[in-house]
Image 1: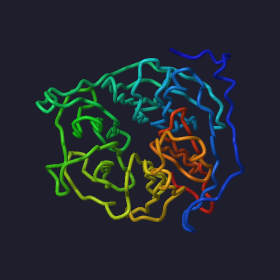
Image 2: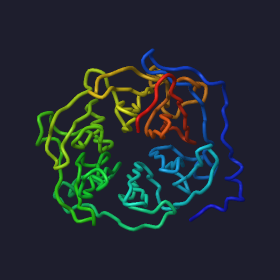
Image 3: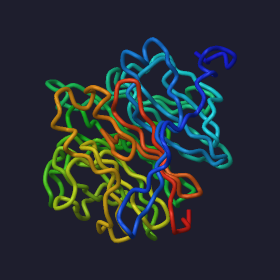
Image 4: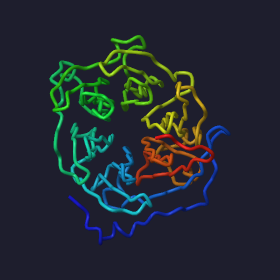
Length: 336
């Protein structure tokens, strides 16, 4: 389902509700634009509408995956709605943008239906991944949450990695045409079993790409090579709830569900937090408590992140009705 751009959705223009606020430690500073884009006010969006995956295209468009119909919402670089589609993703969760030659594709993970789909930017499905026939699923649900791809443009073979973050806490690997290869669950490594491997990310900052796994239930990040071999673990001393990843130059951006965004350097050392607000997590009904606890300059429940070519951060939060914040860097030039 595509939205008629003459209808009410188009009237939802970007809006800055408050003056920009400078946030972050002295080494990492950003100005804050609250409600940078307006989430379409559909009936399903008002009931749910929680914002999850984010990505920025080569052309600078921001793509948002959220739990509403339509689920995929696309904005211009100025924050104006340009397209919306997808009426069959009730558990819209992870969104990953990949490039093959000159064409870009999306990988969408639906944690309620179990669908993992590769689509064009206009919404045509080109591949679906099936749940692997493993004995673990005799007594466990399958609830995929995110996808990472070892893209050929980064020297990869197109392998696809899928986190079953809300189900069996397994991660499954497929080849580029969707044939199942193998699975990992953390027990093969030195850190131990995954507990809610919420997302997976192909880190291309180094000569050899690596798989970063947001092992959220264990409050840490596990790192594997692209063959599925355990390498190391980090973050248990400074992370509480890692949800996703993005890179900006050499920096690693990690939204944490418990009301902050962590910024790490090229060696995965903590530089600081943005929008810290963990006290809000103790309020009744969090993360969907009353609006009085949601303030510009403070996060509520960061869940997804994207970075554009100018180093701007876009943070999606797990709030009914949705919230997308834009953070503009102060004092450094990204190298992406």
